[in-house]
Length: 222
Image (tube, rainbow, N blue to C red; front, side):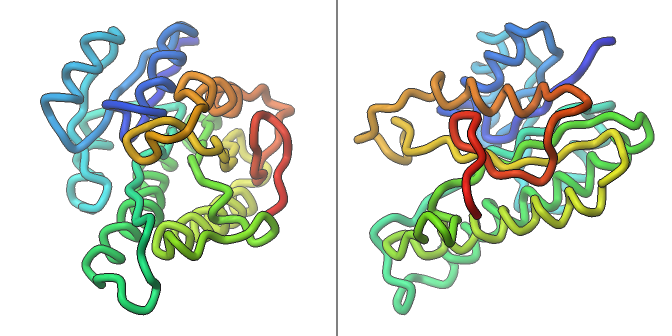
């Protein structure tokens, strides 16, 4: 059966690497992102379908879900970072933009695409999270809004997995580690390395886990 995967924030970095790998696996892939030109360029290079999408806008998300058609795999990758900020003095608009993108944006896309997955009794959702959202691993005080939003995304993963227990839909969170992208150009880990394990979660078999948090394929404590 043909499967269709939608990846948010897929015009560059980890999202693009995930989209490329899913396409190489033979899936129909939708490259979604805010910047129309870069989304189209990435989609053309990959052999995917472009979709302009701002996950911060509920109306836009609903329209995108209608335009995209049946989506079997959703990778919530879109995110922004506030490294070097102080939780006491950080600009509130910046905080809200990060929470809207990194947490509420993923929640919106889940709500938009889950009904179709449930109707078909098959779906995979991968929330691209971070070790910065792990209480066990240590939150990241120097990126306060990012850390809080990713902790919330982890909580959302657990809650959705509980709600979807017994269905054919699985929800997991992936911690890709610190990856050499525009967010963290100093990192040695490549987007392609990070994408490998995210795609593994996107292609889980029916007996695979749900409601977990994984780094390089291994369970990570919340």
